[in-house]
Length: 114
Image 1 (cartoon, helix red, strand yellow):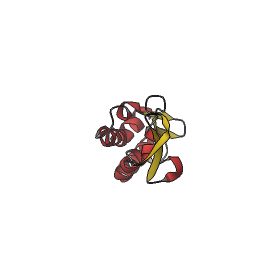
Image 2 (cartoon, one colour; image 1 turned 135 degrees about the horizontal axis):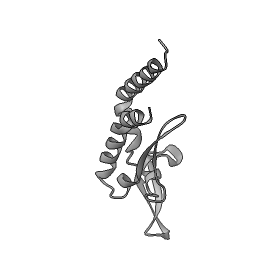
Image 3 (cartoon, helix red, strand yellow; image 1 turned 60 degrees about the horizontal axis):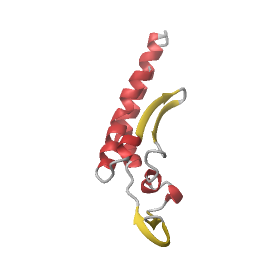
């Protein structure tokens, strides 16, 4: 079941990488997919791409974020967010939900449920 769930969620990951790759070189490589006991997890490594979180708009759930200019704490600038993961999830939500339901039905049938 794990490989099938991973394959079902792959369009979201591919789309998120494509969206982030339009303006970032580090974020696409930091996006990963794993299948857990309670579902599929798509995450972005904060170690590889610490800027991904504010760009996604997760920090404070805002449309803009502030940061110092090249580490100069005396000069701060405001920058717009560039969400990449949430739009990818929204774009593929229906097709992934249908595929996951199909996978679950298939596995249940294999184990004798009707």
